[in-house]
Image (cartoon, rainbow, N blue to C red; front, side, top):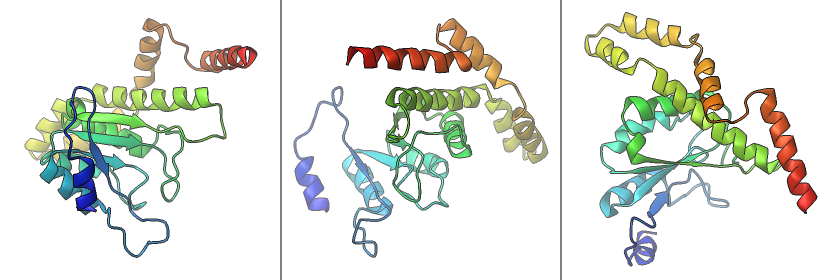
Length: 215
C-alpha cells in the first residue's frame, strides 16, 4: 500500500492548484478481517509524507466522533480535510442534519482555532430527495453549525477551564443551548438576500420547475 501511494504521489503538484490527501477506511468489502488502509496507517503516512489527512465521518466505528480526533491530529499535521456526511452504519453518505455530531465538529474547529487549517467537504449522495435541495440543505446545516460555534463564548469557556472552574463552564455550555442563534441566522439570510424557512421551500420548488422546463 505504501509503495503504491509513493508511486502515485511521486510527482509533486502545485499546492495552489491541488492538495493531495489520504483517507482511511474502517473496513473493505470482502476483507473485513484485514483492512490495510486503516486510520492509523493513513495518519502515519500523512505525517511522514506531508499530505493532508481526510477524516471521513462514514469511515469510523459508530461510537467514534471525528470531533474528538481533530485537536490531536492537528498537532502533527499542517492541514486537514473533512468529509462531512451522515453515515448509515457504515459508509453510506446522506445529506447532513444539524445533529450533535455536526455541532460538535464545528465547535471543535472553532475552539481549537482550526478553521484556517481545515478544508470542509460535504456529501450529498442521498438520491431520495431533490439534488438541489440536498445541496442547499447540507450546505446550510454546515453553515449553521459553524455560526452556532462562532457565537459561543469560547474565550470565557477557556478561561473557566484554565481556572478549573468547571461549574461555570458547564453552566455556560448548557445555557448557550437555549440562546436564539436562529435569530442571527435569519438576519444573516436577510442581509445575504437568501430565503429562509418556508420561503426556502418555495424558492427550491421554483428553481426545480425552471430547470425541468429547460430539459
